Image (cartoon, rainbow, N blue to C red):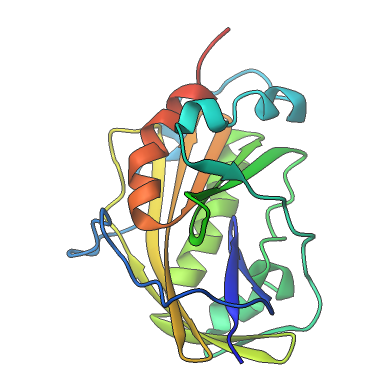
Length: 232
């Protein structure tokens, strides 16, 4: 049985859907030389006075007009927090089951969007915006990335389906925002593999997370940050 791996902003959910042709394209991913994630320090940034509301964050997400032709909105799947077991990564297991399904980041203000490219469900990009105190954003996102990239290989069993995962730290885009994290994840299930790039940038009290096909993440990351941090 083929299993398609769907990626949440900071974790994994397994959807028992047909997986198209094996997708292992890493075009555009700068993963030749791993480097430390989580560059910068939360105290380096000027603290913004208040968190942005979820409505304000929603208006700062990329939309079809920003992405260009060929992108279709992808309905968000309900979060799955049950039946998820992490094997071979104690640090991630200690964070609880929600860490593996993207539910650990419980910031009060957030917005999400996801798109497929050219009708190919294996070429996807998702964006999440969160807003809270800079110190809390930094601590929570850093803790998740450290746990995930601290285990080069591990397995997640979701809904009875085993998914083998390999992780690799990537050079973070240091010129963007106040802090940056980036990683490359390879998910293998049912003999099929999917490669996902995930980059997070904290700018003051705003956290941007972009995940998906490596080439699409590289193409739209700067644009996503520019819109998210635009004033007015």
